[in-house]
Image (cartoon, rainbow, N blue to C red; front, side, top):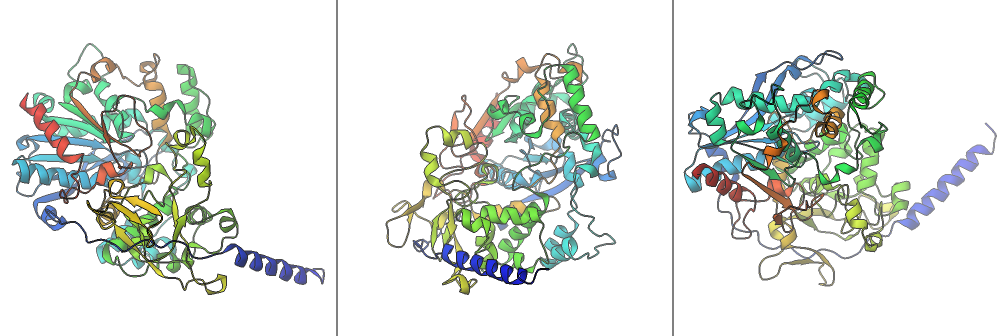
Amino acid sequence: MHKSTPLLLLLIAAVCLVLAAGCYTPGGPVPEARRAPAERAWTAADVDAAVCMHMERLYSPVPRDNGVPPEECDFIHFLRFRPETASGDPADADAVLVLMPGFLGGANSLEYVGRQLVYMALTQEGKYMEVWVLDRRPNNLEDLTGLNEAEEAKDIQAAIDYYYNGAEIDGRTFGGFLGNEDVPFLSEFGLKLAMEDVYTVITTMVPDPEMRRSKVFVGGHSLGGPLTAYFAGWDFDGDPATLDDAGYMNCAGLVGLDTSLVPSLPTADLSLGMFLGYPAIESAEDYEAVVEGLRDGTYPRIVPMPLMFPEYLALQEQLAMQAAWAPDEESDLFKRLPAISPEVDMVFRMLHSRAMDQFALPIPYITDFRYTNEAMFAIMVDDDFQPMTALQVSCGFLSGGAVVVKEFPLPEDIANIPGLNEMFRSLMSISGIYIANDAGPSYFELGQGPLYSWANFDEIGNGDDPDYMDAEGSDLYTTTEDEVSDVQDVARFIHIGPTNALEWYFALRVNVDMEVAMADFGPACGLPYLHGDMVGDLPQVTFVAEDGPFIPPEAENVLQGYNHLDVCVAAADRPSRRENEVIRPTIDFILGVLAQ
């Protein structure tokens, strides 16, 4: 090494320190004090005492045309919610609602809807209803061993040791997060399998066809809406002349949660192919070529999504556990990790950089700020801090320290360009995103800032004063209309139980098949969507979030202030503040159909 090299490196390091110190300017407006929370009409404990949740398994082997999947993939898993006092025989239920999660969603994403709907139908109407929420088969690939051990022990260290330190649990050690090369068989986990899974669950659990037609309802959240429409129009024996097996002949009605009950989303014109490199599919031959590309690894078998890496999704579940168990204690999860991947580091920098200079250095880093467990979890999902539309829920705002507008990755002024908000809407928010701005008095005193806590959705305002301002009353952060979900309910559905709310490995084959199923050549490709003309004849109800990824042209129930996940978890137990605008109307819809 040249003798001047160390001196040069020291000089560069010194310049970087000076630049970093100059870029970090703490301070800014501080949110006002929290208000008294709203009164609850019932508690989570009341619901848990009245409603049971079980994970059910049905054996149904998956295709083996491109490798042999793990044994657990041969089982359909679904969460079943029913009254504790019920017989357990679905034939005795007044109605059954079968739900499909959205894109990157697991069964737990509809845990709140499931248990609250069963509880409200029972206590307010005296009706025995069940809700079944399906996991897609790729969810069976997730190694949740460390997360489930941590949940059982109520100790997050069990998960850290399992996923990062090589710890063994019940004779198993973590083999790493899966990549495309590990899952060749996912090339076969497409729309046909997803449809057959719904049909298998319904026909196995409710074998009487007439009973299915009279009291089984099918629905879904987000991508689950188009999947619901495909189910209703699907022909399960491929013969259009025999109708008893058609989807629409096996249910009484359809329910859509922040979605559209048509077989393609309004954003489907932006085909994933243009982002992932596979060509347009205009014939059966094109389709076979793309499927072959999935099989041989030319195209990814797992949909790659920015900021939604499996490791990060697993960490988000750990944050949810800490938020549930010790909401007011200072968060230390990220500081306890022995190492993180470059992908997760990128997520942290994207989510927690005020501007480009902080992202590039990155100083201060997310671990330089002090958050309670509840606040750290909340900034990963709340619509005022998390820009990714698919992950947004409105559950309150930060409290206890300076909070300023976030100017990265896009400056807020760019939102003033006409049409830009709508262009980005399905992917991310480009305005109204905030960030904490006090990690300490100076660059040399990071980690010594205030302890940020969380003002829950019902603590940011009330009917007399709906605005949540800074302490000086000059800056408006949010309003009561824009906050509808309890942060603890969100933390619960992210982590509780044997499965989870976030799908680590979403199979691209589903999207490819959805592009083809409506085409004239779809049936020739083994996608028998033959009864699309009957889907609209079924009774149906749809709820759409005002601030979700899209508002379909036909939308009627547009929910003011709701974000994409609020439709699944908006608080139902504080009607004095605001009625839940999904669960009770869904019960009324089902009862109305039953009365016909």
